[in-house]
Image (cartoon, rainbow, N blue to C red):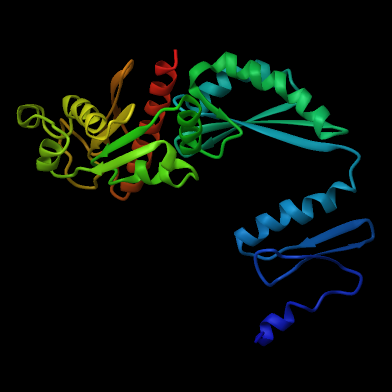
Length: 309
């Protein structure tokens, strides 16, 4: 039975345009008058976003003789300042499409937006610009019109017919979580091992006791053997590993909080990266873990690219 506050949602201003809500009970509406338009939507983001895309955007489009179309270029491995410096003259020389940089967590996005009479014409304006930017920036561009790094990883693994497995210490399964949040990940993801204890690193992943004693769990050598071990254990084409100190405690002057080693192992490409997070204060644990997972996924993309040459 509807409650009184549900019934209240059925009251609409006279003359309003009402928009159905496919994901909740509160409808949206628009009122027009004196050359102005007010649009009201439900608050929950899941309901509001879906309503805007399905109902509001087409409604608003009728008031314009042009359409705006955007494509998003996603970049990792190069900061916003460097991206803007390299593309500054190119961006200033383009008024349609426009190019706008955005700093996001552990990555940079470039939004390329064109105005035209039709979507087809707008996309035709954007296409050459996107291609030129990819050429100018090179391998730091990890995807165009993808939602995030994990989606790019799953898509490219599928396209190349490859599979990946993860061995994680300080990230605690975050890399495998991000990969498996993408629909269809079961086609490309073999397994993930969360190996916090040195005993598990040794007994399950095959990291030698000598490596752990001589170099420690947080080391280039351990990351290398973890990546090789998970690849061997799973039979995957690519093994990726991470070991580090996420804090807030446990750091030393030689190995401070925020120090992470990442490894990738594949038939044609193997690499270990030392990464020191710029955010090492207490309370930044989740930030350090996310950056580590982002860099690990970047290594997977490198391995995909190198194994496909």
